[in-house]
Each structure stands twice: as C-alpha cells, then as structure tokens.
Image (tube, rainbow, N blue to C red; front, side):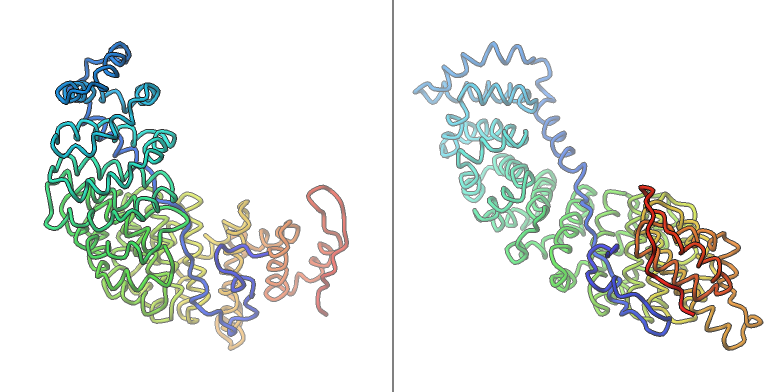
Length: 520
C-alpha cells in the first residue's frame, strides 16, 4: 500500500540499502491543498460596503413596500420613468447583497427587464443602474448566479466590456464576471469561452485607476483557479500581465496576482517552464524577503514551491534567485502555521534534487530551524519538516546525512513514531533507516569505536521501544519497515523479535500466524 500521495510506484520501491539510492526527483511532491479562502468573501464585503455606504437607512421592509411600484414603473414605455425607477432600484440595491433582497428581486420577475437595459448605449446611467442590480445578483449564491447565466448575460457582459467607454460600467462588469467565474470550474470555462480574457487584459494597458486594477486582478485570479484546472494554453496570455502586476505597490493587487500565479503553476508539471519563462521568479523571491504580509507571502511561496517540483534545472533557477536564505528567514519569522508548512514543503522539494542542491540547503543554514520545527511545531508542520529531512537522507551524501543527524533530527523523527498518522510514521522510519545505514557503514570501517552511534542515539531518544511497538501496527508496510530495521541494526533482539512475531494481534482481537520469518 502506498502511503505517499502522488508518487505512484516510486514510493513502493523500498530502499534496500544505503548504496541503492532512490532517484532524488522521485521524492518531490505536488501540493493539493487549495489556497482559496478569504478572497471571495473579501471581495463580497468590499462590494457590499461600496453599495451601502450612502444608503444605510433603507430597510428590507422599505424595499418590499416599494417593489410593486418599481415593477409598474420599470415596465413603463417611457425612458424617463425607466431611468427614474432604475435609480430607485440602484439605491435599494444596497439591500441586494443580502440573500432575501436578491430573492425578492428575482421573485418579482424583473431581472429580465433589467437585462434588456444592457443594450441601451444611449443611456449609460440606465445601463449602470441595471448592471449594479445584476452584479448584486451575481455576487450572491450559486442559485443566484445561475439566474444570470441562464438569462444568457455572460456574452452580453463580455460584449459590453469591449464596447463601453464608461469606466464605472466596465468595473461593475469585471466584478460580475469574476463572481460568476469563481463559482465553479464550469462557469469559469463558460466565461473564458466567451472571449473575456483579451478585453480584460486590455483594461490593464495602460494601468487604469486603482479600483479597476484591483477588481481586474481579482477576476483574473478567479479565471485561473479551480479543479479540474483551467486550460493553460487558453489563459497563457495572462502571464506577462501577472508579471507586471506583482511589481505593483498595492498589497491587494500583488496578493491576487500571486494567487493567480500559484494556480497556474500547479495546472501541470509540464507547464512549469512557462511560469519560469514569464520572469516572475526574481520578484517572487523578493516578496518573500521584503514583504511580511501573510496574504502576499503565502501565494508567492506556493508558486515557488510548485516550480521546484519540476526538474533539477527548474529548481536551480529558483535557487539561483536566492530563495534559500529567504526560506530560512521565513522559518524563523512569526508567520502563521500555513506559511511555515509551505516553506518546509518547498525545502523538501529542493532537497529532493541533486546533491549540489542539498548542499545549498545546508549551506543556507536551513537545517537548524527546520529541526526546531520538527521538534516543536504543530503536527502538520512537523510532518512537512520530516519530509524535508527524509529528502536529504534519500538523496544526500553520507556527509549530508551525518550533518542532519548531528543537528538533532533523530530525536524529532523518533518522537513522531508514536503518532497516529501512518504516513508520518513511514516517513520517520524511512529517514531513520537511512541514517542508521550511514552509522552502520561508519561502524564497519572502525569509526566511533566500531559502534553505530546513530543506533545508540535512537535508543537514547526512546526510538527503539517505539520501533518495537510498531511490530503490532495494523499497517503492513510499517510493520515490515520496523521489522527490517530491528533485524539489521539490533540483531541482539532476534529472540525477542521471534516471541513478538509468533503471534500478531489484529485490532479486532482475532489472532493469526505471520508468514514472515526471521532469517537465520
């Protein structure tokens, strides 16, 4: 049974001895967690505040009292009445950010009437009033968005984005399209397939007012996120624009541009070179070094982490841009847990490269804070640190392994052997086994008085007792790893092992005889 995600058969091929050597590239791991969190809610709150700041005295009751009259006027043949009523609706649209108010608008059957106003190029205020209502609906629930989509308004929005000269109208349309796209991959693809990308990118050349830059950047992010991933070739033209946006001074713009890059960099491993060729690596590394905002650092770090899941040459580009000292700095700063976790994951993938890259990790003085995290951080951050140590022991030289052992990693690995996560136990056993093989090689050439000093250290850290207890673990792979380690490095325990192996107790209490015998 494979315990390591996304590695296929590579993880199932056990390391039979130190000299056998797993290909370091096989230990690199892709991230599957989604960074999507507060951005949608933040944009919703911004939109709501914008709409309500001058109309706070209106209540839902006022809206319900006025809605019948609004329907009468909205269907008037006279444009002035339409315009007057749309302005009235614009005032009341401050309530449309609340689900009951949106439902009231929809239930009255007036949304199609508002949709017809999109073509009124002769009355831009009428268009804007209608768009304000429609955008309020688009930023509602998935059911509310479906109303907009089923009315066929996506192509109308895209056309108006290209044809209108009114910046307020364009900004509202960009916002509406972003909310529709972020709802689901199918809506995202719908918006893209209607040709939104080029008119959207044209809004940023030259850069418009800040509010437009912010909403456009957020919408670009909305158009590239989601699983299944976006068609990379369809959105590839966004890369030079994102390169421009991460150089802006507005934190919100930079954060959303970094988020977009983080999603594009994980679309497919064979697209990593396109991300590198866009020239974003130097600025992303600079953001790690200079910026202390979590909402910028996290997606910048995720993008760099995705890049180093590529081959050694692609990883070297990130190293050459100075990422390792920045990662060391990130580990020692007071960031939230997720950032430390991402940093450890990135380090583990760099250490999954060649020996020169492992040496670069060590030279950057990353190992001491990494081991501090292994011993003292929260569990899921410890797990990523353990992966990084394992990467070094898999692909590193004997000197590299001696170094991480001397820094105190054995205790951290032993402490995690009793955790309930079988993947973590497997990682720690693998790392310890690799370290023990180096100790055994040193012992065989007469070093340390012909004693395996790492086996001694495992015992001092109560690791031996924990490994013995794993002989009754219900995960067969963990059982086999523990047995192999004990047989090789503690042969004096053979009689005790036989007694343990005579009977294996299943979790349900049933007994069965093991078919694994100790070699004699």
